[in-house]
Length: 491
Image 1 (cartoon, rainbow, N blue to C red):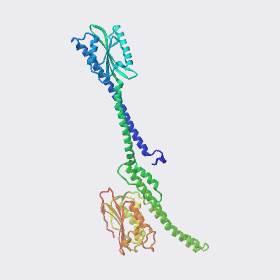
Image 2 (cartoon, rainbow, N blue to C red; image 1 turned 180 degrees about the horizontal axis):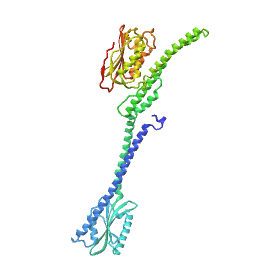
Image 3 (cartoon, rainbow, N blue to C red; image 1 turned 180 degrees about the vertical axis):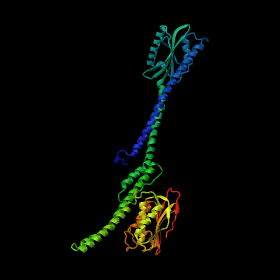
Image 4 (spheres, one colour; image 1 turned 30 degrees about the vertical axis):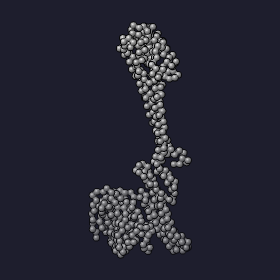
């Protein structure tokens, strides 16, 4: 996120895009409104001119000469009266011409003095000359609206020929708007709009800078956290705020860190365990090899047997360590619908080969559950191995399963030496052995717990010294119906 290292920052790019889009929207809206407002002003000018022309025609047809009280009998009187009676709008002026010569000007209250613009007068002279030529040719001159541009401004003018029956004179009434002044007044409004737009962009930029910074803060924290992570410290987490996409991204990143931390912890644990447990058999192997007499066949054979035994033990130890290392991987458990009653019965059949005991079934759960049958078999057989190790020949060992309160229970029960309550948690530690005289790696119960936890469950122990132990795997059942227990009492 640092601009010095990565060019323009995301914050700047996002804010620049927002400001550009806002500026574009304001510009498009302003230019569009300006265009239509300009068209509206031109339409208003034309309407005002047409209305004034209509009033003049009404005056000519129905009006009376104020001097005589009779209908107008001369063009000069009609033009003079028309200039006085037709009200002029702001930025509008009028002139009267008789036989091509200026005869009358607008009243003094009219601010726009058309006669003061020589270029306008010259342009009107050309129009009047053309009208006079048309009248001399016997063609009746027609009024028109025209646009006249001068160095001072642009005019929108109505040129109206005037004739009266009984008077051979040709008069012309000119009414014109200063179109440039009208547009200037409109432009002043849009200059204010532009100023407001600039101020709005500045306000948007200021607010956007803080808003975008706040929105991108989780991403910035992601970068800072990623930079601070090392192989020895993966404990940092980013607080999850809100429930939007960035919050989801933050949660995903935290989950990734947790998986990495677990993976690194598993690797370190595997290395520590392997170094701790393999050092002893390797030392034994090295010592016997150093002391072995190659010329003595009996010593060589004895050393060979001992080495093979130690290598086999190391192989079993490595297998157990690898099982524990894989326990946190997502693919450690491959769940599929499994008949729990059949699985329990199969485990009992395999366990009978582990030792001379009275093997029996406590109960069978008549249910199909989504579990990994191989892993569960591995866990239950490990419990059976422990039961054989800590029980006398001929004693009873029972296996069972049932569904209880939407949870699947699988257990192994023996009549062995039992476990003191204060050691219940200790026996799940790696390489923990309560009786060092009994053979074992101390990884059996940790593997059982890992398999159970991978199924989302937990392990419980019920035991009494001298009476035996029952170890139960409690697994949750999700979405199962018709969960029935069928208990079979076995001798």
